[in-house]
Length: 335
Ligand code: TRP
Image 1 (cartoon, rainbow, N blue to C red):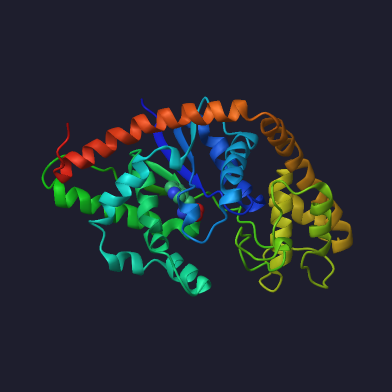
Image 2: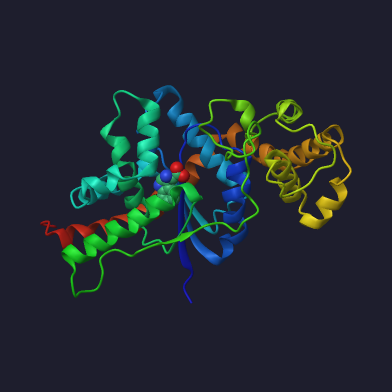
């Protein structure tokens, strides 16, 4: 039986944090042997908002190295950089020309980012989800692991694929495969350290709101010491009045691999002063081996560059075949 194909991408902007790891990357690692995986650093998406060219390449290497440091195994996964495979940009153009403008104007993330940015919103920001659709459709991905916030983009991807199939392959075998979303199991939704009702996010202006995978032990200690709590003694899950307690206990549970009941019992009588050092130790213990592997990879980029070249070649083989299929269906003169 052939394995199902998984594709996902991370932007090389901001720093990867504990929410990315516990909510996404850790699950990819756990399931990787069951799938044929493609993990992409989506650096073309990174320029849809104003960007700094002096850090783009470094951030791209950082994300690729973090994939590896978190346990993505090159034997099970093709790791590559989006801009290294030109088919992504090329398919985006073809898909642009069959995607109704109002589908893109309806995207919640576009509206939010456009408002945040104010003036001079780039055409590329509106087009962001079409590029994402190209990422996915080029690989005939079966499953796309994404967070809740990307579900609408995935539905759009399915709509675009269905439209291509309808326009150019009616009553024929489909040209593009419709992917399924693959939303992670509950329990790993990590919330902000400064507001227990908001998701931990790369784009939160306050760095105190998140624990980055590359934060030092001192930074982690400081962030947890100062994180938002409440004045109540005794720590409990699931009290709607205490989102921070629920988040921090949940985080502790996931990091220590205990059951909810065990954590609830352990912490029932605790105050924050007693709990925070335990949580801090658990975070540091989880991140230490990841950071160590990361620094090993980054001290000599020869290995990483080689891996990304092999990844590019493998990805391009698959992507170019799909691109040919689409061009043929669109009626292009192929030589
Ligand atoms: N838009 C995604 C995000 O911000 C990143 C992304 C780009 C992606 N292309 C993708 C995710 C393809 C999954 C598949 O999280």
